[in-house]
Length: 207
Image 1 (cartoon, rainbow, N blue to C red):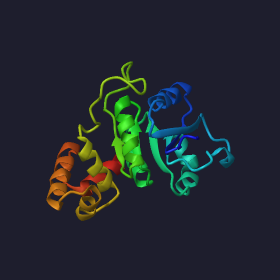
Image 2 (cartoon, helix red, strand yellow):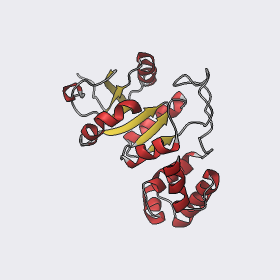
Image 3 (cartoon, rainbow, N blue to C red):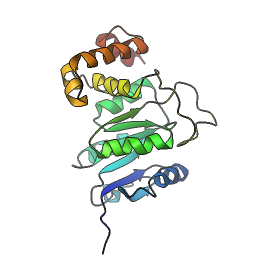
Image 4 (cartoon, helix red, strand yellow):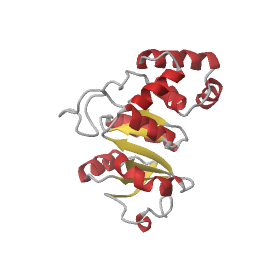
């Protein structure tokens, strides 16, 4: 009797080492089936068949394939990037992807993040603000600080703020009270070093 496929994943990354590291994370995950991986798409015919539930895509390849991938109903995209500058992160968030993972993200966090995305959630791991070093060579190593030292929930709130969601909309999406969202937003503004939404967008556009 054939085994049920369940949730499906496809990985698009130019580095064979990173592809292998990412695929190995889900090798023994009974809930997720890896449909395949490629270093790049040459044409739209290279897109995986069967519309995987989630595609983990190297950010550098995203601009070329964004429109095509976002039209694939039922497939959610998580971007994997070595760059975590504020402007780039904002562009990713505004493009409508389900998540952003900086290359410094520890493996256990990547696994949890993709399970969250499979479940309909979003995930933003912005990485740290230090220069890359030997300890940040891809999946693995100790968990770094967020770029702005934000907690996981604060990163979620920041992502929605950057999508220009109101506090009420954020509360509904994250299943929080409006006052809790207001408190999180205040902490985000303080850590980022801005007074509010307007100054946040000015900072991003200048960065």
